[in-house]
Amino acid sequence: MLNYDELLEHLRKAKMGDENSKNIVFNNNAPLLKSIIRRFIGKGVEYDDLYQIACIGFLKAINNFDESFGVKFSTYTVPMVIGEVKRYMRDNGAIKVSRSLKILANKINRYIDAYQTKNNAQPPVGLIAEEFKITEDEVVVAMDSSRMPLSIFDKFDDEDEGSELINKITLSDDEEDILEKIHLSNIIEKLGERERKIIIMRFFRDRTQTEIAEELGVSQVQVSRLENKIIDKIREEYQK
Image 1 (cartoon, rainbow, N blue to C red):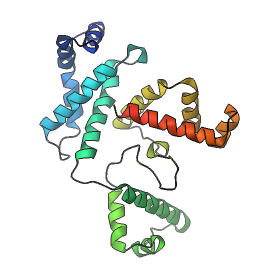
Image 2 (tube, one colour):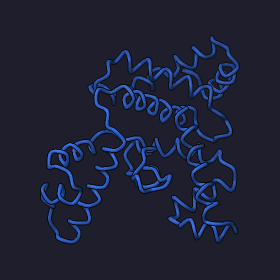
Image 3 (cartoon, one colour):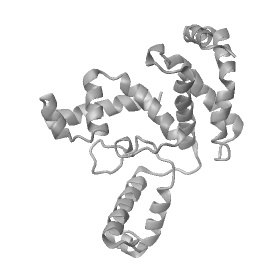
Image 4 (tube, rainbow, N blue to C red):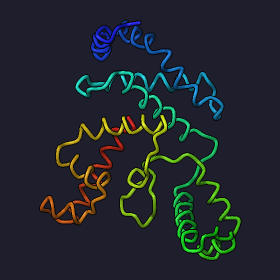
């Protein structure tokens, strides 16, 4: 096994196209890749395919890693590889869930939450169907679809202008969520100072667009446009 200084030296060479160093870095991290893959076994994708996809994520990690991030290469690599495997499974899985069905499922779930809070009981399927003017079968299909994996960049509601799931979810502290947060944190750190300030105020301090606009001395419309551009930039970096 390489010590960290040796690994960094080979990483520098690998980023410059040295195939021998790339192989050395890969072999040094092979156990890490296998441990990541294990969590996806039995979810509909063959092991060999998982391994190939993990390798693609690993190569992206080599090419995108920057020592100035202040994190170990392995810490940076794990969420990159996990993200690559998840994207593959989402895009190539046997079950696809349409955006309209996801939106309907989100609306139904919010309705159920509100009903339970008010009545301390689960609403019957017939009542949900009546509320949304759909059949009971369509309610069941929509509710089942909400159990499918979602992208954090899926639209949360067709009435939310530019708002996506990344803006709505609260991550728990299980291992995968922590790794996702590390990856997103690295991306946010690379934003410009004003972009980073808007993201932090909006999604980490729960400030409204109007409050942010007042602090920055711009209009709420400008904040909304900036927010959408920043989310697009984060999405692009996240999907690399």
